[in-house]
Image (cartoon, rainbow, N blue to C red):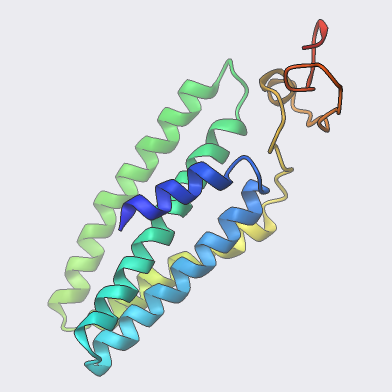
Amino acid sequence: SSIPGVVIAGLVVDRVSRTRLLTVAMTFTFAFSLAFAALAATGAAGWLIVMSSCMFHSFLTLSWSVLSTITAEVFSTSSRSTAMGLCAASGRIAAILSQFLFAALIESQQPSTVILLGSSSFAVGVLASITSGLKSLTGAALQDIEAGISLPKQQISGKSNGYPTSNGYQ
């Protein structure tokens, strides 16, 4: 179920605003995580539980793909590798710590709390993507991103991509 999310990300990430795509993906991740929890709790048909789980994972993969793209773009080239390393390290530390929290909740016979806690993290992701204030960098050239500006795409006939560069137009 990861493949559809990666394919959709690859096809759409350069055509749609990344923050909008992240918002939509996180919203569907949140919705399908709740659907999965509700279907599993009510003892629905097995295929419905599996489909909701697959849809959840597809949108989760789409969310991570878009988030990785956004994260790489918000840092200048000179600090990008260090910043990405810090983001990856903090994410891994949080993943390790969450295992202890979820294990404690499962041992206390509260699996619904685990699912609701996980789902609430997706709701926070939706709110963060809406309120982040990140400008859209979709279609911006690398030097524009490094300079912290986002120039609109120029329509220039006979040019390779129409983006302004430091030497003029390509």
